[in-house]
Each structure stands twice: as structure tokens, then as C-alpha cells.
Image (tube, rainbow, N blue to C red):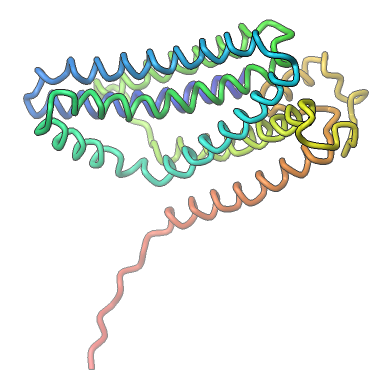
Length: 284
């Protein structure tokens, strides 16, 4: 699914970019002996994220339907918060992330043995945690809470991560050059729409759990025009989490998130794109 592929690609590219900067800086400064600490931190971060994913899946099987919907809805809202922060942070930090990471490496290298391990864990683990939560909620929504096979969204995410790893390696080797600011701008705008769909479905989960009212109060129902079983219904569901039968509360949550978030994001992009005009000194 395009949404999960994009999440895997974007988050994977962020992690690959971080790793390539860390490794390249240590190699260029003649500190190859510190590379095992970076790899140890990356392995630890991947292990923690994998354990969280397995734990969430195991926990869900032991819960009642209402409890599953309650946890799924809550995690959807948390995932949207993570992704929103990531969208705005990366849009502004794409140009300065290298200098920031190099400063952290220098400080950690002068400290204790675990300093660089911690830098790698925090740098890669952040993207991993965001990916874990977002893909967990997106997979539940794409499979109706586990009623259908979840192989497709997971494979799509893994394919996105694999492409990101390949791009990161090519960037490290100097084979390709990507305009990261433009990349994160376009993917950020698309992910605002995807996150709005995740939020709306999270609200639907909470309605099914009985925490929020209005489960049977529909804003619109286009199930006849867009059957959920059709290829285009499946496509809209998988990419944008579109529900043909949307409640008033779902539609309200979508609008209250998508409109101001997209507006602020585009205004920020426009502000960063306009070069500042140097002040001309005035003379008496």
C-alpha cells in the first residue's frame, strides 16, 4: 500500500541519512575504531522497536474487541502526534541535521564508552518508534483490526525501508544526490493527508470501543458509489484510510487536523523558501 510504503521510505531514509552521516564523519576523521559502537546502537534500536511491535501484536490477541479498539484508537492518536512532529521537524532540519549530528558525535566520543551507542540509539530509535506506531495503526486499519491478512501493508513498509536503505548507501558512496528539503516537503504534505485519515479512523475505533459517542451518526455514506470491496475502494482505504461510511465525529476530526496542519506546513515551507533580505545600513 502506498501509504505504508511512503512511511517506510521516509522514515527509513531519515534513519539511513543519520547513519550515513555518523559513519562518514567517523571515517573521515580517522576514528574507524568507534564504528562498532554505532552499529551496536543501531542494533539495539532495531531490537527495541521489534520487541515493541511483537508485544503490541501479542497483547492485542488477548484482549476483548472493545479493549482492542480502545488501544488501537489511542495508539492512532499517539502515532499521528509523532508523525506530525516528524513532518515539521524534518522540513526545517534537513539543511542542518549534518552539523547537529557531527556535534553530538564529537561530544560523545570524548565521553564514556556508551556515549556513541546512546547517540545511535536515540537517532535511529526515534524513527523506528515512529514507524512502529504508525505502521501498527495503519495495518490495523487496512485489515479491519486483523480480520484480513496483514501481509500486504507490512510488505509495503518493508519495501519502502529497503529502498531507503539502498538510497542511503548510494548517498554515502556519493553515487547520487537528493534534494532532501524538496523530498521532505513533498512527502510531508502527502503524510499530512495520510495522518488525517489515521486520526479519523482512530476516532472511529474509540467510537466502537464506546469511549466516544456518535457511532451511528453518519456525515455521509457513499458505500454504493465506492464499495469497500472494489479496487478503488481498497486503494482509497489503504492510502488515505478513507471510509465510505464516515461518522460526523470522524469527519470533524479529519477537517480539524488536516486544514490547519496543512496550512501551517505550507506556510512554513514558503517562509523557508524565501531568502532573507539583508538590511542596508543607513547613514546620517
